[in-house]
Image 1 (cartoon, rainbow, N blue to C red):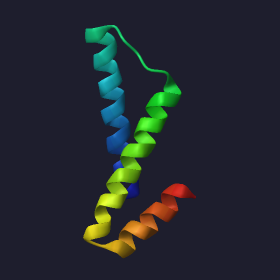
Image 2: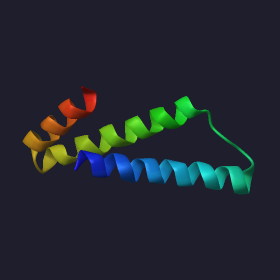
Image 3: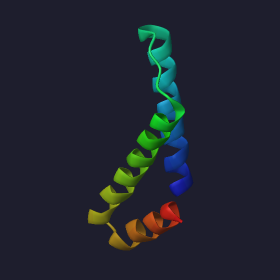
Image 4: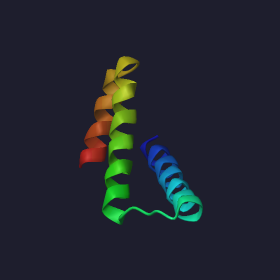
Length: 65
């Protein structure tokens, strides 16, 4: 499940960056995109806490290790 979240996040931010470069002629540095992806994945993992705290905790530990 964590791999899927990472894959989806990478696709989303890659596509968003592509569109920004093509349509708005703007770009972000790589480290900014990496921080946005990291924050998105952490937020998504934390959103699982209400449904299944155990899974959320395990996924967060894996993400941070």
